[in-house]
Length: 208
Image 1 (cartoon, one colour):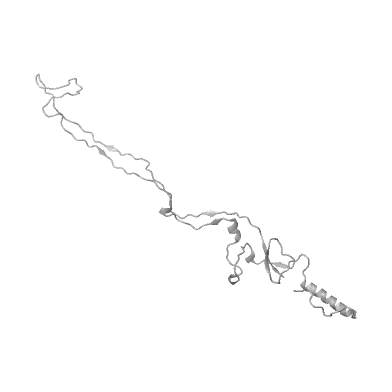
Image 2 (cartoon, one colour):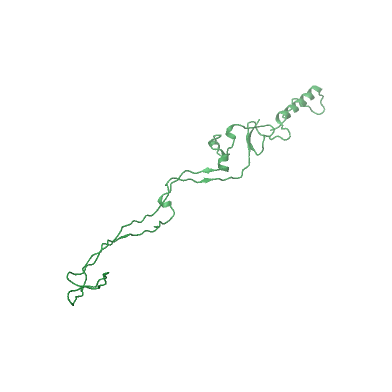
């Protein structure tokens, strides 16, 4: 696209022209340059063009976007038919820097690590009632009598007991139980990620 275009007065060599024609062409050139050329240091683009700049302020001829949708936001590449302008609610800094908390999760039995439970040990108590073994009726037997006599009998003879009377014991083993200890509440747990990713800031500006 030409900046100046066609001059209003086409002056040719060998023709006579007055000052008004020359000034008309000159003013036309000045106006076209001012309207279509860019000053030194400006970025050329059609009016309304939006671009990102990695700097704190917009270039000359551009206006920085200050709407809240541009604050702490990612840039997404889409096709023209999918263009929606903006979306989402979570700021980019929350994901880039963190912390990010995951949803709670309760472990299933299959997800638990293999482990064992041990018994801390236990004892069985016993109970035994006192008892005696008497000698058979009419027989003589050795005793530990305190009087000094160590046996008794009739006349000059005595009989040795062949066996003592039978008796039973009431010894029993008390029952006991083993207790395997466990702990835990069975509640859900979550994991927190602090990414702290590196980043560079950008602004968005529109061409005036």
